[in-house]
Length: 68
Image 1 (cartoon, rainbow, N blue to C red):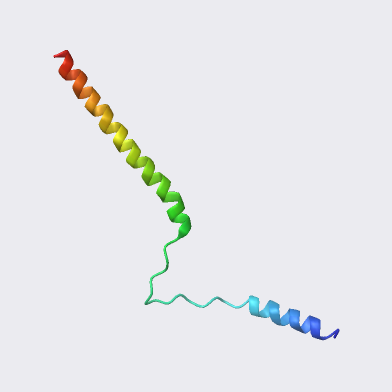
Image 2: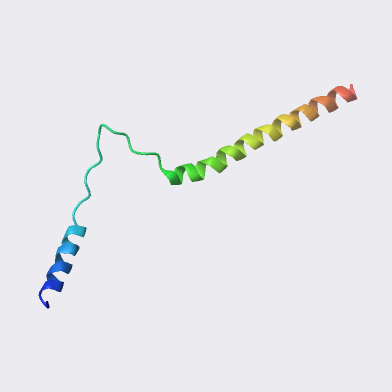
């Protein structure tokens, strides 16, 4: 029993230190969830900014036409 526990721990540690398998070159990697989580709010903010800019441009044009 005293010998079994250290041997099992040694085997577990040695298998944990092996290099991971290389990725399959024929299959592209899955999209990263973190990148999506970061880019989704940024894309939304850019769309909102475009909407705000378009509204401001319409107001400027309307004001310019009203003053003429």
